[in-house]
Length: 177
Image (cartoon, one colour):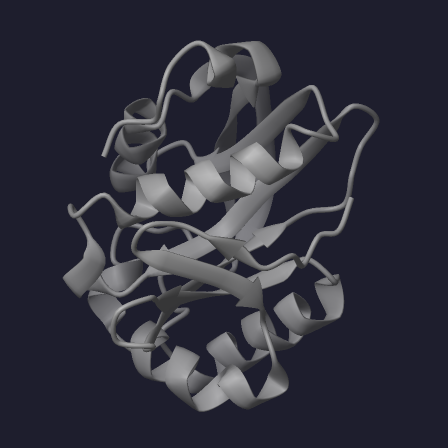
Protein backbone atom coordinates (compact mmCIF):
# COMPACT_ATOMS: atom_id res chain seq x y z
CA UNK A 1 0.00 0.00 0.00
CA UNK A 2 1.21 3.49 -0.81
CA UNK A 3 1.22 5.16 2.63
CA UNK A 4 1.63 8.63 1.12
CA UNK A 5 -0.97 8.86 -1.64
CA UNK A 6 -2.72 11.97 -2.88
CA UNK A 7 -6.37 11.67 -1.80
CA UNK A 8 -9.00 14.17 -2.94
CA UNK A 9 -12.35 14.84 -1.30
CA UNK A 10 -15.01 17.50 -1.65
CA UNK A 11 -13.26 19.98 0.64
CA UNK A 12 -9.84 18.48 1.37
CA UNK A 13 -6.76 17.22 -0.41
CA UNK A 14 -4.42 14.90 1.46
CA UNK A 15 -0.91 14.73 0.03
CA UNK A 16 2.50 13.58 1.22
CA UNK A 17 3.91 15.78 3.98
CA UNK A 18 7.03 17.65 2.83
CA UNK A 19 9.89 19.22 4.75
CA UNK A 20 8.86 22.64 3.44
CA UNK A 21 5.47 22.25 5.17
CA UNK A 22 7.12 22.93 8.54
CA UNK A 23 6.24 26.65 8.87
CA UNK A 24 2.61 26.30 7.82
CA UNK A 25 2.00 23.19 9.90
CA UNK A 26 3.66 24.61 13.00
CA UNK A 27 1.52 27.74 12.61
CA UNK A 28 -1.51 25.44 12.99
CA UNK A 29 0.00 23.23 15.71
CA UNK A 30 1.15 26.16 17.86
CA UNK A 31 -2.47 26.71 18.95
CA UNK A 32 -2.25 25.19 22.42
CA UNK A 33 -6.05 24.66 22.52
CA UNK A 34 -5.70 21.95 19.85
CA UNK A 35 -3.70 19.92 22.35
CA UNK A 36 -5.54 20.85 25.57
CA UNK A 37 -7.35 17.49 25.89
CA UNK A 38 -4.69 15.44 24.15
CA UNK A 39 -2.29 13.20 26.10
CA UNK A 40 0.62 15.02 24.37
CA UNK A 41 -0.67 18.35 25.63
CA UNK A 42 2.71 20.05 25.13
CA UNK A 43 2.83 19.49 21.37
CA UNK A 44 2.11 23.19 20.73
CA UNK A 45 5.67 24.00 21.88
CA UNK A 46 8.18 24.34 19.05
CA UNK A 47 10.82 21.83 20.29
CA UNK A 48 8.14 19.22 20.99
CA UNK A 49 6.40 19.77 17.66
CA UNK A 50 9.75 19.73 15.87
CA UNK A 51 10.29 16.14 17.17
CA UNK A 52 6.72 15.20 16.16
CA UNK A 53 7.31 16.66 12.68
CA UNK A 54 10.64 14.84 12.29
CA UNK A 55 9.00 11.56 13.31
CA UNK A 56 6.21 12.20 10.80
CA UNK A 57 8.70 12.84 8.01
CA UNK A 58 10.69 9.71 8.91
CA UNK A 59 7.57 7.52 9.15
CA UNK A 60 6.94 7.27 5.42
CA UNK A 61 3.20 7.59 6.05
CA UNK A 62 2.57 11.25 6.90
CA UNK A 63 0.03 13.31 5.01
CA UNK A 64 -0.59 17.06 4.89
CA UNK A 65 -4.25 18.11 4.99
CA UNK A 66 -5.00 20.98 2.64
CA UNK A 67 -8.19 23.05 2.35
CA UNK A 68 -9.11 22.54 -1.31
CA UNK A 69 -10.72 25.97 -1.69
CA UNK A 70 -8.02 28.15 -0.10
CA UNK A 71 -4.98 25.93 -0.59
CA UNK A 72 -4.10 26.41 3.10
CA UNK A 73 -2.41 23.62 5.02
CA UNK A 74 -4.80 22.93 7.93
CA UNK A 75 -3.45 19.81 9.61
CA UNK A 76 -1.90 16.41 9.16
CA UNK A 77 -2.45 12.71 9.68
CA UNK A 78 -0.45 9.54 9.33
CA UNK A 79 -0.64 5.89 8.41
CA UNK A 80 1.31 3.65 10.76
CA UNK A 81 3.33 0.59 9.79
CA UNK A 82 1.20 -2.33 8.61
CA UNK A 83 0.72 -5.11 11.16
CA UNK A 84 -0.62 -8.27 9.56
CA UNK A 85 -4.03 -7.49 8.11
CA UNK A 86 -4.39 -4.11 9.86
CA UNK A 87 -2.90 -0.65 9.73
CA UNK A 88 -3.19 2.28 12.12
CA UNK A 89 -4.40 5.76 11.26
CA UNK A 90 -3.42 8.37 13.78
CA UNK A 91 -1.33 11.36 14.72
CA UNK A 92 -4.07 13.52 13.21
CA UNK A 93 -4.94 17.10 14.03
CA UNK A 94 -6.75 19.95 12.34
CA UNK A 95 -6.83 23.68 12.86
CA UNK A 96 -9.66 24.53 15.28
CA UNK A 97 -11.40 26.63 12.61
CA UNK A 98 -12.13 23.29 10.87
CA UNK A 99 -13.51 21.48 13.90
CA UNK A 100 -17.20 20.59 13.80
CA UNK A 101 -17.43 21.14 10.03
CA UNK A 102 -17.09 17.54 8.90
CA UNK A 103 -13.43 17.87 7.92
CA UNK A 104 -12.22 15.20 10.34
CA UNK A 105 -14.81 12.79 8.95
CA UNK A 106 -13.81 13.62 5.36
CA UNK A 107 -10.12 13.17 6.15
CA UNK A 108 -10.73 9.83 7.86
CA UNK A 109 -13.12 8.70 5.10
CA UNK A 110 -10.43 9.32 2.47
CA UNK A 111 -7.73 7.58 4.49
CA UNK A 112 -9.99 4.65 5.38
CA UNK A 113 -11.16 4.09 1.80
CA UNK A 114 -7.54 3.94 0.67
CA UNK A 115 -6.37 1.66 3.50
CA UNK A 116 -9.29 -0.75 3.41
CA UNK A 117 -8.50 -1.72 -0.17
CA UNK A 118 -5.35 -3.32 1.23
CA UNK A 119 -6.24 -4.22 4.85
CA UNK A 120 -9.24 -5.82 6.55
CA UNK A 121 -9.08 -3.46 9.54
CA UNK A 122 -7.89 0.02 10.45
CA UNK A 123 -7.08 0.80 14.06
CA UNK A 124 -6.97 4.08 15.98
CA UNK A 125 -5.07 4.42 19.27
CA UNK A 126 -6.77 7.05 21.45
CA UNK A 127 -5.87 8.35 24.89
CA UNK A 128 -8.36 6.76 27.28
CA UNK A 129 -9.21 10.19 28.75
CA UNK A 130 -9.15 12.10 25.44
CA UNK A 131 -12.84 12.97 25.33
CA UNK A 132 -12.67 14.90 22.04
CA UNK A 133 -10.93 12.09 20.14
CA UNK A 134 -13.18 9.41 21.62
CA UNK A 135 -16.24 11.40 20.57
CA UNK A 136 -14.78 11.86 17.09
CA UNK A 137 -14.23 8.09 16.83
CA UNK A 138 -17.91 7.54 17.60
CA UNK A 139 -18.88 10.01 14.88
CA UNK A 140 -16.89 8.15 12.23
CA UNK A 141 -18.09 4.68 13.23
CA UNK A 142 -15.08 3.53 15.23
CA UNK A 143 -15.83 0.58 17.47
CA UNK A 144 -14.11 0.43 20.85
CA UNK A 145 -12.17 -2.84 21.19
CA UNK A 146 -10.97 -4.57 24.34
CA UNK A 147 -7.35 -3.81 23.39
CA UNK A 148 -5.61 -1.27 25.63
CA UNK A 149 -2.07 0.08 25.81
CA UNK A 150 0.06 2.39 27.88
CA UNK A 151 2.41 4.97 26.36
CA UNK A 152 4.67 7.52 27.95
CA UNK A 153 3.70 11.04 26.93
CA UNK A 154 4.82 14.26 28.58
CA UNK A 155 6.76 12.25 31.14
CA UNK A 156 3.81 10.22 32.43
CA UNK A 157 2.31 6.84 31.54
CA UNK A 158 -0.97 7.42 29.70
CA UNK A 159 -3.56 4.67 29.16
CA UNK A 160 -4.83 4.31 25.59
CA UNK A 161 -7.70 2.38 24.08
CA UNK A 162 -8.00 0.99 20.57
CA UNK A 163 -10.86 1.67 18.18
CA UNK A 164 -11.27 -0.13 14.88
CA UNK A 165 -13.12 0.14 11.62
CA UNK A 166 -13.29 -2.96 9.48
CA UNK A 167 -13.79 -3.25 5.76
CA UNK A 168 -17.31 -4.55 6.47
CA UNK A 169 -18.32 -1.84 8.95
CA UNK A 170 -16.99 0.86 6.61
CA UNK A 171 -18.99 -0.60 3.70
CA UNK A 172 -22.16 -0.70 5.81
CA UNK A 173 -22.50 3.01 6.38
CA UNK A 174 -21.08 6.41 5.60
CA UNK A 175 -19.06 8.29 8.14
CA UNK A 176 -20.99 11.07 9.85
CA UNK A 177 -19.90 14.68 9.51
